[in-house]
Amino acid sequence: MSHRPFPGRRSVLRGSLAASAALTLPTALGSAPAFALSGRPEAGWGVQTGDVTCDSGLVWVRSDRPARMIVETSATESFRNVRRWHGPLLGADTDFTGTTRLRGLPSGEQIHYRVLLADPDDPRRTGEPVTGTFRTASARRRDGIRFLWSGDLAGQGWGINPDFGGYTIYNAMGALDPDFFLCSGDNIYADGPITSSVALPDGSTWRNITTQEKSKVAETLAEFRGNFRYNLLDDNLKRFNARVPSIIQWDDHEVTNNWYPGEILGDARYTEKSVDVLASRARQAFSEYFPISTLRRPDGRVYRTVRHGPLLDVFVLDMRTYRNANSTDDQTTDAQGILGAEQLKWLKGELSRSRAVWKVIASDMPLGLVVPDTGDGKPNIEAVAQGDPGAPLGRELQIAELLRFIKHRRITGTVWLTADVHHTSAQHYQPSRAAFSDFEPFWEFVSGPLNAGAFPASALDNTFGPERVFVKAPTASNVSPAGGYQFFGEVDIDGHSGELTVRLREQDGTVLFTQVLQPGRVGQ
Image (cartoon, rainbow, N blue to C red):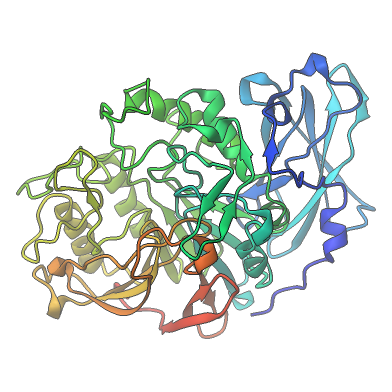
């Protein structure tokens, strides 16, 4: 790797605001009306960048009142020579959030940026600038790539605990100086209220920062917005956001547990029973609080390709929006599957056109791990595998079609990354072990959670012949972050050899497992 060193923490954080140390924070912090405020606009929620490529990137900010977003970029942290970008007017219609696209950036370079918020009525009145930095993807193969992935934040009632240091896993991730972070879903738990304290098995107490919006399941747009703001109360996450770009996808907990289109909830906690209504509100809040390149398209889709130079393309899937209803998943025909026909066609086309050495398929759910959905008392299936080790059934039919396509089109360098199951593991899929064998071998790596309950390892389904080469998981369910079992993964691609190295890491950065993959092989 030939990464350039990061600028000092002082320069990255200049202008940012510290989060409150109080355990209970008022709703007004996130939604104070503009007429009640005085002074200049402030950006106390930090900055983020997302979907960074060789020559572009998105910058995000949130204001505390109506303001014009202005971004200035420079090659140096002194900002001696700046390029100015005029962004949107931030108002109540987007919860005072906004994203500005930067184009024409130099490839493989450290970009320093600062966001200014200007009074719409007097552009000369600007708030204190908030600064950040990111690297554009390199057009030179020799520079190599390092990125991280994980998922599952503030789940099962385990929120920001000041006694625990907050979301400390982001400090370990930031220390690795990644080019970007891939979040594999469950960025929030809209269905998971957070209380001020939780009793732990050893007699101690876990204490959470709480907010009004996190005191119940999210149903209104304001409550979904409050769920996304909650995580930004953590200083560790805000520091990480200011220096590491993201690629964000979603899964179920951005809306509600195990949801699918058309579902009508039987959960007594909800007064709004239509999942489609909840998902629409969640999608709006999701689009407001993350810099994602496709969400401003007419179709507002989450699935997309993020190209990161000659070494890497990332194919971000959405296994939630287009799926069929959760069921026993044992039907012998299934045209819709978990991706939907249109997304499957898109993925095949993008994989065929890709010339990148490595093609990471960012999947918000695993392929061969059995993930049940027993919420309504039925033995339904939430992911792809249903536990029948024989020929493909249900959603497995669509995955079999995709794997067959990869083999017969001779597509090389595919690697599957996911989270969702709240433990870390590595599975190798091999046709000689499988009931369905018309595919080439490949690897699937699982990481997470970032800060949520940890759970025992999922059962394997032999339809695609997975062998669990490594796993670390608790034997009990919903182990708190204080009990460990919080994970993230690292991917290093060497610019000279093209080798891809996966490391599964614990919360403090300790390496648990390493696997080196060679380039140029069909499947992988």
